[in-house]
Length: 186
Image (cartoon, rainbow, N blue to C red):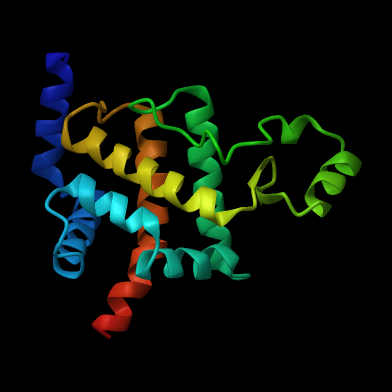
């Protein structure tokens, strides 16, 4: 790791806290309390990916026809596009990203594909599989791998791609996890 990356992280740590890490700490505390049989973070992430409270919250925000729902779907689209270019720790939306050339299709063909019900449009130029049983676990894994990249110093704090990945992960986790916390602690 370049010394410059280390010094940049140190410099930034003196200015402000890194908000996405604080969100992850809250999520980590939540799953330690509500998934007590999980011994490791990996166990907890695998359990979350199986369904339950987090999945229910995901379903609600993914289907929401609101600003929150739109922002959430756009954040997923951002992550999909970034991981098309370069995976993170060999993780991407391998099973969800079934329409990588959606933006190059004519509007007529786009509508035809959307009308099959097999894909859903996330943002202007991004469409993915509509099966949330496939999308949800992949999204949770992507968020977790971005968290790992942050914790283990794999991202340069000045790298624009890293900022986009962290932003996408933060928005997604915040939109999923926020309602869970607010229901339990209004």
